[in-house]
Image 1 (cartoon, rainbow, N blue to C red):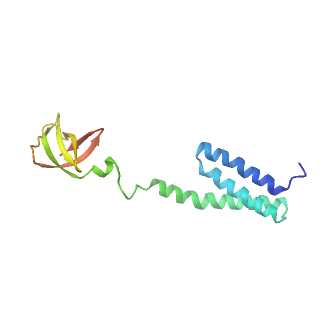
Image 2 (tube, one colour):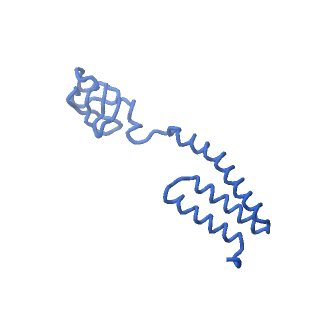
Image 3 (tube, rainbow, N blue to C red):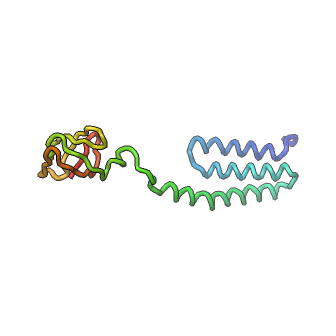
Length: 143
């Protein structure tokens, strides 16, 4: 084991930290792996073990302290562009077949959708414009 340089061991450690990163999808393992690569670079320049460990700790802690809060903030943000059924909520539709609490048909975004009135006592007649409140499966909830 003494024949292998320290920088090789740091790279092996970085690769070993990459395995749980892929398996668990925890980005902290990736940040530790980058710290190990930094330690490998320091070892490649011939610094002793204390400086290598210090480089590993400083880079790893810095990445966790800086990148993790930024990633958490981005993860908690809603997407700027609504897609799929989220993009249909709040749009207007035209009634094609009478819509009441038990069902009906509307034309929404150029497509024919089954629909149900939000209020079971309400009914909307053919040609009337309605607002889409929610989508449940393939049924638009309108009011």
